[in-house]
Image (cartoon, rainbow, N blue to C red; front, side, top):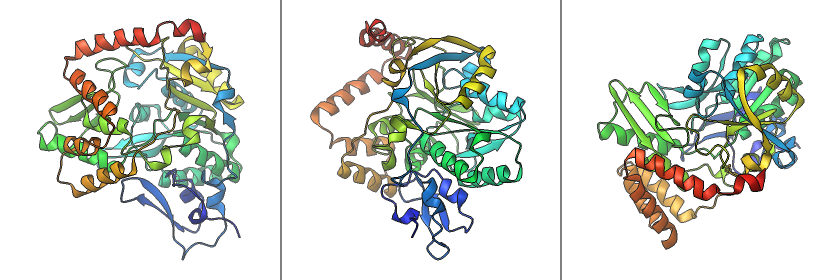
Amino acid sequence: MPQTIMELPGKCTGCGACYGVCKEKAIRYQLNEKGFYEAELNEERCIRCGQCARVCYKNPVNRGSYDLRQIKEVYAAQSREKRVVKQSTSGGIAYELAKQVLLNGGRVMGTGYNYESRRAETVIIDHPEQLKSLQGSKYLQSNTADNIQRLISEMEKDKERNYIVFGTPCQIFGISKAAEMKHFRDRMLLVEVFCHGVPSYLLWDNYLSDQEKAGKISYKVNKVSFRDKRYGWGIYTLSVHSANKTVYSTSDSCDFYKVYFDHIALHEACFQCNLRKYESSADIRLGDFWGPRYANRKDGISAVVILSERGYNLWNQVHSKLAIYGKHKISECINYQSTHNYYVNNSQMKLFYQLINENRLSLKSIRRQYRKGFSRKKRMVLFLKDLVSQLPIPIKVLLKKVLNRLNYKGKISDEG
């Protein structure tokens, strides 16, 4: 008998592909008690066809098509349009790729932010003016299910139109498997991002609530940027705009980012995810070009890893619209991405969810509570970081440049 999602080992990534391919509507897709989108089987509707298992990353027989460690080179690039670079998380390459597909008569599927629901959601667009809503990273899990279903339906009806799809590696994996099963993978250009993992919506909701209670924002938020470049590309800055109020928080002083980088509120499926590390089913992988070579750039440089012939074809079409700074060894990029496993103490994680679900403490208080369980060495490092976070922004920017020089000294020549 075919496997179903209920019989597959491991945590559901929430990619939504199983929901998209199930014609019996036997799969529910919703936020669970920990604040993550998750697929759940409705046994009464299931006919045991096994299609959900065919697209699921948890299925041991399913693996990605490429290993990033086998790729020799990575491009460092940036859009030639300064406006595009400014509004993008790094170099604006995703914007240029998407725009080219639209100009070719295709459609774009990517992640926007719904200001009514306060959730990231996957949407499909067909006009360049709509691209702005997709620009910038959303460090949240995107609600994908309905639009994956729509994507499959549209591609089954229209046999000519091409699509470019942007997402996290697990989302792209599921969509790739669904497209292969439906025999239209050749009409899709799949672009994934280097992924740190996705945090719980309980964390995001609590952060916004704390800002409201402090009078820093009103409930009606009209713009969110998770990587605002107000203080430069390398300084993670979360900006939230509402009415006449705006709050800017750098990652070292932002409770949302502090908990996020503690990994205490990450989806457990992200902890040891091979897709987040080296495995891929995409045509292109994009990210920030971290590392020594571009460490002190303020504008943003993208890392572009091209994985397939389809990826190269589109890359060649946008080549003239880009400033390409060179091709480098893949190690210069991938060694500075979040490709390691995460390990979190289960009791500390349990305490975090217990406290945040009680909805009586601020995020700062919750963070102080669970950090008591960290080792003395780790608590000392975090204490020093908290002290640095009190410095004025210009001093922190200067300090980061100095640290970059010290950390990366000599590494450029060693690596390439």
